[in-house]
Length: 394
Length: 148
Ligand SMILES: [Zn+2]
Image 1 (cartoon, rainbow over the protein chains, first blue to last red):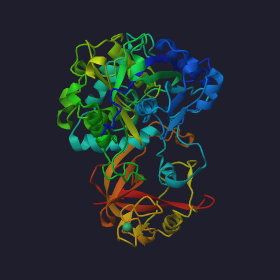
Image 2 (image 1 turned 60 degrees about the vertical axis):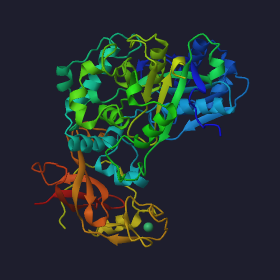
Image 3 (image 1 turned 60 degrees about the horizontal axis):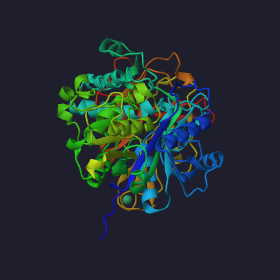
Image 4 (image 1 turned 180 degrees about the vertical axis):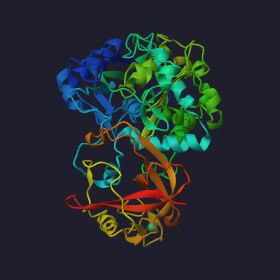
């Protein structure tokens, strides 16, 4: 029987992004940003954009596949896919869905993308503005529990308290992102370094574990990757970056309403990470460079733990800035600046950075990486993650 | 069951109290009683309200009164106002309360009881029914106060 897997079956042949802006500062409309990112990814892959025959996205992206197909004059649309769930939980899933489409023969050349102009549209960090809370929200909003940070903070309180993890562990995650952003001209936070004192004196967003610098920015921009069958990728300008593993979803009742998930203090990766490693045929010790979605630093911590990259009892000791920096750290993390300091492009910028690392063209290059991991937005449902590898890993 | 002034300032979204799935909860809260779903099939409690029992798939979910006592499972104290009604209000504490006598279902509310109330995981709490009689339609929120 043929093994059912995406391992080595599809590759990212092109990456692209627009200029990244502070929220509300894009001169371009959101849909125009999406078009620019798609064209950039196609140009990077050396493929005529009209050859694209599919689009995969997530987070209720407003740039619809059909409008993109019409605007770009693509020859035919064979695959259009929206991954359920808000925010960036679906970033890795969108890439995986594109890969599944090209591997199964449903399509040949699929863009996975995200476009966001929060000046043109509403911001995420604002609470609900409706006068009445319906459904599950009726049990949350009247108590002032409305924003994404507020929805997730009690998972962090519980996990950090149960495991005796200090806030300094989260600080190291923020410091690593800001450190890497300083040498990255794409980064919105380039020229705005962060140190321990600045972090420690930043205002509380939510006690006890969310200071200002534990929380992502909100930004405008777009980013895209072009996914093709593995065979096709060999003849294109860049060394192919192969999908080794991809998984999405959540553990038993992780989306139980009103904070009733049985395993509550979780980023929702326990089963996803297991499935991811199983497909990729590797383990946490094989990851050379890591991109982990920071909506909030506490979610990064949970994601690292649930992917077996850090043990809870070692988190205080291991999560120090030096360990997380490229090129010399034991576990280089968010090497372009990530959501915190490069751009909050709902994690698509993390996929692009993972590809750059494996092409060995990153600004903060890790020495000769073979395997990169992207952990998508933690604590939402469903979540997703991705393992990518060079030709040598096949 | 005592009442207090409101934990949060006016202007936050009001709960929709007349949806079929949750109306019995809100009706009972007006009367100072805490009602949750209990499955007629397997006899277990579940929360938040759903049309089906996640354990045995019975659609026969009853509403039963439970003792308004529990313990803090987790907590948070937001400082940043995410809604115009909260601007200038300052920090407030949200608690996730586990009800041990109702199969450990959990509920969200605000921690009330003055500045001496320090949230702590494991602390015992009791419900405080907070009527919003001025609202149209009026509703009652279920808040929590540390006991002992
Ligand atoms: Zn049942």
